[in-house]
Length: 179
Image (tube, rainbow, N blue to C red):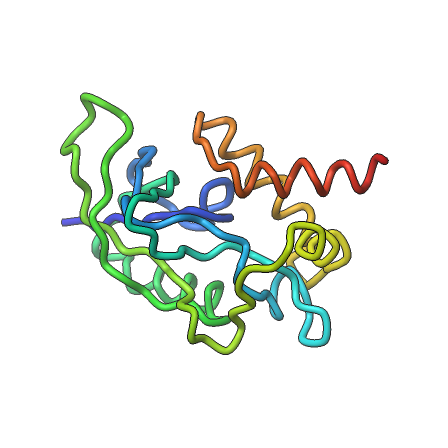
């Protein structure tokens, strides 16, 4: 028996747990957005960073990585992920579409962490220049917020995922650093 966990942010390039297998996967009806505040990892309470959450969008989708883990280690993995995602995220069960054709079932039942719009750290949308300034200037215990953005953009490109929101932010942040 096993369980799938879906990662759409830092879990793509740094899951932080052992898994049996991984697959590229798509979550329909949701889009990744840099609308969640990070007071504990990529920012601090008086200067939060911006990290991704999922926003429900009927025609949207979000590509990420699905990880299959052994059932006997699920509680330990959730303990770690609950701490890592403690700043407003909750677990939710979803169905994913496997993007790796010919490998197992095309539909994957999984658990994902989503920070809903009513959580204490939700920042919501902002003009692109404001988000870029916030990301470029924020640092926290897990490092620079800019590193998070650029690592995510690189990981998405490596898996041939298209995410205009992330790529536009990454391009604008890079341009701000190299005028």
